[in-house]
Image 1 (spheres, rainbow, N blue to C red):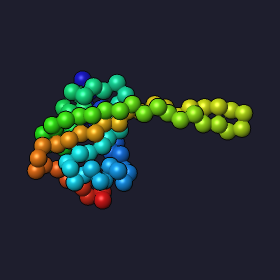
Image 2 (image 1 turned 180 degrees about the horizontal axis):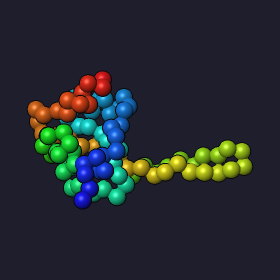
Image 3 (image 1 turned 90 degrees about the vertical axis):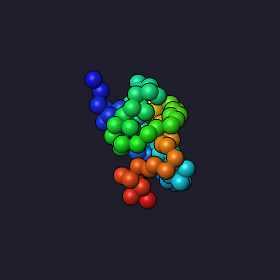
Image 4 (image 1 turned 90 degrees about the horizontal axis):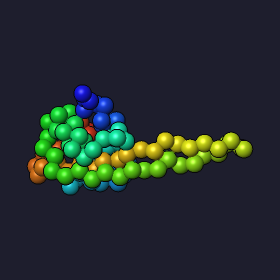
Length: 96
């Protein structure tokens, strides 16, 4: 059984993510194998809010070089979660 903290890795901290707070949308880095249903259930359990919608995006890792050595950053998955009207995640609102 996965806990909410196995699915939600950390919040995305960017200007675009902060701008979405006003619309009740919060952005998280999530486990790459997590489904939308698992993400919604994890956010509801962790933050005690009602999730209306979940949009996900797989972000490919960048290719990086150091001289002749080539490497790649890991692929990640981002989820934008919309909560019910009038609700907000207080733990993230304090980051602004």
